[in-house]
Image (cartoon, rainbow, N blue to C red; front, side):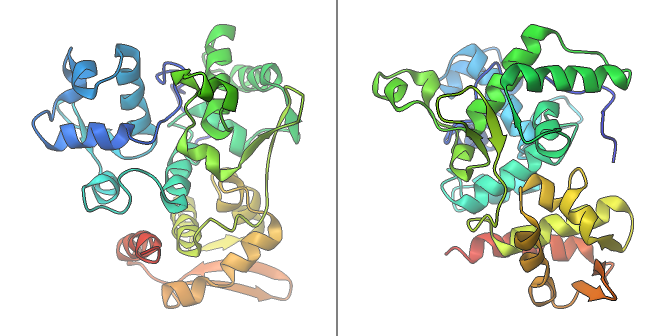
Length: 304
């Protein structure tokens, strides 16, 4: 996996975190009368938001894996976007934990999506940090690898948007009607927490009971496929960048319990094995497309 893309992204969200109805609103316009929505000067009018928010919606649609740029330069829904956001789709308004975990995976598992998010969940050193410390770590990481280092202002805004994505809004600001305080759906996952009375934050790992087993199986298959191998060691699945353990913040026992259910979930196409102290997942089928699609579909069917 390329840890530092050639052009890592540190902007585009306009400092707005994702909001619950944004993707559905844009999806309906894209599949309706405005397939060139994000190329239109009046896109913000059609979306019913400000100009900066319209740009933010385009950003979140891309990094969440539900919109992609086509050959004409316009944005169109992806296969996952259509399955998720259509009127009778899996979860058009992102009310289920499954939809929120899925979007989190797309944001945090891909370094080319939103690099601050990828770095925080996959590469961050230390268990606790302040926003300036996180910004400085990322700038140093990019500099050490010869990338274009984002400015202090850009990094400050990017880190603030990350925090707004995963931490609950201040109830006092919501009560006062401050629109910017509206919570991002991903804040309900509880992945990023603030120390009481401090400006320090930490990533919360654990069993993640709201995370569906089928989604862990889907992510495990994606990780194995990305490696180009048919076997993945437990430690890689737990600790490597872009792994289910890292991205979903599963602790060792939590990940192990999910992996032990892989065989039943995949009809033996993915199997966890522990022999002579060597813990691995084996992928035994070349028909990965059907398996991946089936796991994702079942993730949401199981909720109905």
